[in-house]
Image 1: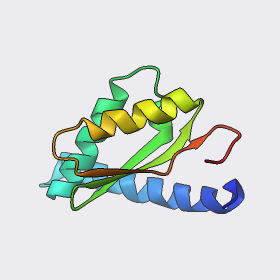
Image 2: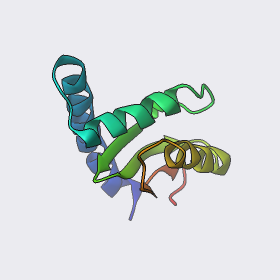
Image 3: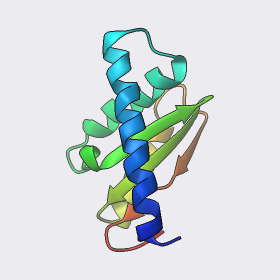
Image 4: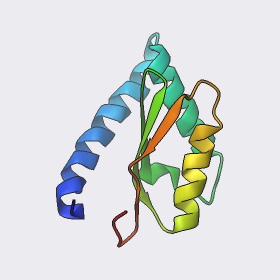
Length: 102
């Protein structure tokens, strides 16, 4: 799948994810929203990972990662952060490496 096709999907997902994150601050969250928020916080704790370019979604304990990283190492690291977050059952890493597709 080309990046031109994925970009609109990533943008829409980022808006939806942002809305979900906002709702956690203002009202009770579902377990999946809390899990996605926890994974995002853990990613943001790693300055080498540009967390603002990554989006996280969770469904029934499965975490989906979307966004752009700059290297293969960052691709593995963001996945590892998600996998080691308590409550995560499985990780689906849909991130791409900058200027490359996975």
